[in-house]
Image (tube, rainbow, N blue to C red):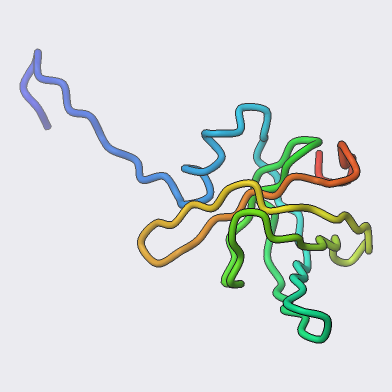
Length: 115
């Protein structure tokens, strides 16, 4: 307990996804399970299951272990609903061994990522 007049501030750690979401002011917290598919060449398709943690009509932000870089194209598919959207990597945030990815939808606003 501090003495009167002393202020103690507790620092809350932001997750990697929260840090990236700060750059997208319209993005709101959501929890949407998705499968992310990235194509590498014509034969290789890399996939992972993850959760969209922040979204707006134009962007989705999630943790990823895929080797995604700025400009890569991906497909997001909602699980289990099956809604799909094509997107392009718009930003990547690295922090302490994790990677957050923000993608921008290619066909314009995507309504199924906004809850």
